[in-house]
Structures are given as C-alpha cells and as structure tokens.
Length: 80
Image 1: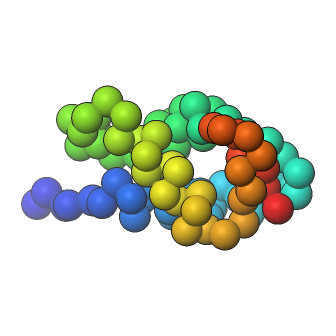
Image 2: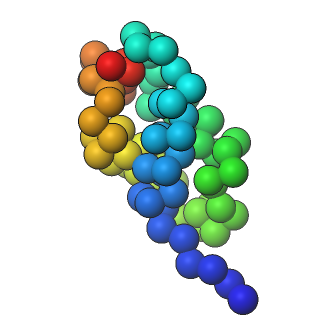
C-alpha cells in the first residue's frame, strides 16, 4: 500500500526534530537545511518528483511555523 506524504508536514517534523539537537545561536543557510532534510529519514522518494525548489520553500515554511528560528539575513536562519 502506498502511503501519501505531505512535503510541508514532513519538513516541519524534520525541523522540529533537528532543532532539538541544536544550541541557540547556530546558523544554517536554507541550502544547508535542504541538504540535511534530503539526507534525513523524513525525506521520501516521492518528493523527488516535485518541482526543483519545492524543498527550499518547504524548509522556509517549516522554519516559520516552528517559531524557534530567526532570519538573520536572506536565506540564513539562526536558532533562537
């Protein structure tokens, strides 16, 4: 049976799990977070069929929803 996954939901789960392991003040670019997401267990093979920057937008969405990150400059986030 094929399970349906939501890219935004899985990305938010990844960000929440990832930020638990970080100290405040750690900085990551959007690109770095996308790479870490792609290497995580939250990334599903079906997401590779999405348009090329879907993961970038999903990371942005997850970081905003989490509420534990600050945008320090365009494309760079700092854990609060």
